[in-house]
Length: 369
Ligand SMILES: Cc1ncc(COP(=O)(O)O)c(C=O)c1O
Image 1 (cartoon, helix red, strand yellow):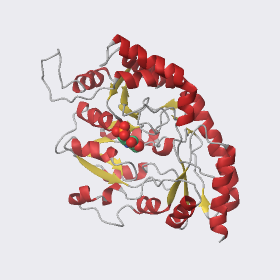
Image 2 (image 1 turned 90 degrees about the vertical axis):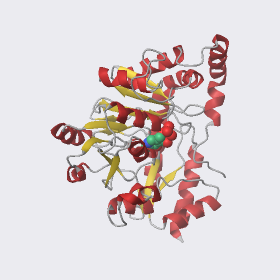
Image 3 (image 1 turned 120 degrees about the horizontal axis):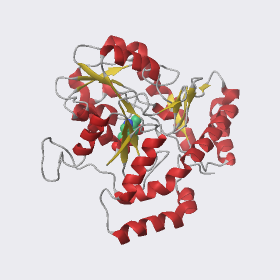
């Protein structure tokens, strides 16, 4: 049996007529940039996030970058980020000309450890970027308390967490801005790149709308240096077809996650299944376990037709591009340990029970040896 990490083909077949019709409508209208589809998605996703504004941008990385710029983050400033995340979280900080300050994670949730944030704050700190990794929100109350006390912005990296909840609050409600990615593999994935920023702050929203169109307002008049970073109308048309299904897809992911966790119980002590904070609604963008002999397991599973992924094998504080910041191995022990032990199993709403049974049977086979 072959079990892919992710298979988007079935979802496309289910939605094909609607998606093709939506694309046809855009092409017939010949309105390709910031048209009605982008507007509709912005309104719908802002409402979904319980905030006033949605701003469609080219991708999740730009969503972070533009958020930072709109908050006035630039050279000389520091921004606190977890080191256990996708590169874009810290890349956006560096692209804004500021310095990422890396903080360790809570080893249970893999999210930034609020207790470590306080120690990292200096008079240069301007913002915190909590990442809601794998689909579970970071400890926002504690982060917000610290941010409020030190007057820092919170930019939520919600690239992996659309639809997740924390104490009944959704992504975007507690941060200054929240950034979504519509990269094709995300829970709400486009057929190319796409992203969106949501915020309740009118002034920051307006700045971000200007920044995504070359800093121009009115058109052809530039007071700030902006970018060409807009959510594509064709991608928005596809996303408008997919968005109404998002919550059902998340429920299916949660069901699959529960199945994995139940099946893996036998391996307690060898395999650590995901820890979900009681107050969290985890939407399982990834189903990530912690194991011994991770690399050998991954190779074994691959030989047996099971694809898996490691998110992420090299922590950001140890990336060559950030060498000049002077971090060394051992600085963030929980991050470094997680990078050696995590492995994500196949996860998508259409994943079949037989496939999950096969994946788990192969994991059991590996550890029986
Ligand atoms: C945690 C995280 N942050 C940021 C991004 C960047 O999003 P994008 O690929 O849309 O630029 C991603 C996804 O790739 C991500 O997983």
